[in-house]
Length: 312
Image (cartoon, rainbow, N blue to C red; front, side):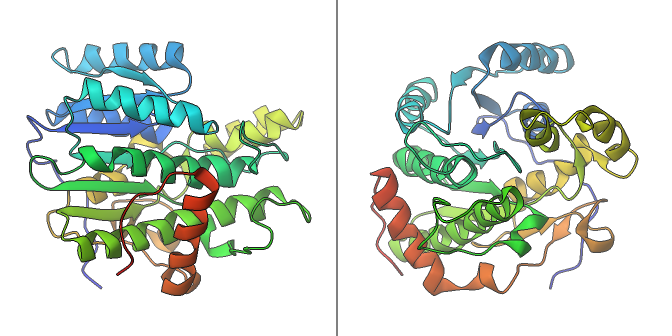
C-alpha cells in the first residue's frame, strides 16, 4: 500500500468541468468549493435547488469568479436522472472531465423511490449508476476523465443479496445503507475494469469521508420522528471532523495523478475515521469481481440504462 498522504494543494483545474451530486451541503458543498478554488467549472447537481443556490452564492463570495451552474437532480427518480444528464450535457458543452457521485441518504426508515426501489439502494447506487451511464458519452471527450463515487466505512457491514435487493423480505435501515455503500464500491471496480477493457481514458475511483459532521446522519432519525435527533446532532460534532476535512479523501480521489482504476481513499487517521487522506481498506466483499459483474448487469436491467461497456 502506498504511504498515506496529508492534505496538499489541488492542481490547476482551469478549463475543466466537474459535476458534483449533492453539492448543496456537507461533503458535496466542501468539494464544490475546493474544486472552484482550483479553477474548475463545477456543475452543482442537486435535488433542492433553492438550497443549492444559497450554497452557490456562498462559493462565489469566496471565489468571485467561480462558475457553478445548477442542475436539478433527484436520484430517487430515474426520469429526473435522465433529464439532469441531458441538461448537464448541454450546460457542459458536451464535455465532463470529472463526475463526483456524492449525494446520498443514510439509515432512513423504509421508503421507496419513484420507481419502486428501496430508497437507499435506489438513491445511493442505482441513481448514480444511471447518471454515470447517461454521462459516459461526455466523459473523456477532450482528454482524461475521472468518476469518483463516495462510499462509506459502513460498506464493511454490507452484503449483496440478489434475492432481496429491494428489501421485500425484511428491512433494516443500517444493513440497507451498508448494502448501498458496498454497491458503490463494486460499481466503481467494475466500471474501472470495463473502461480499461474498452480503452477509455477514464479512471473510476472511490472515497469515503470517515466520520464527518454533515446533515446526512440526521435525516433518518428525523424522518422517523425521534426526538433525540437534534441532541444527537450536537453530540456527534464532538467526535466527528468537519465536512471540509471529510472532503479531503474525495478531493484526493478526484485529482491524485497516481490514481489507478479501482483505487479507494479515506481519512489517514486511526480506523480511517478522521485526519488527512490516503489509501483506504476495502472489505473482501468489495473486491469480489463475480458479484461486481452481476450487480452491473442487474443494475442495468433495473434502471433500463445500459452503459454499453462490455465486461473485461
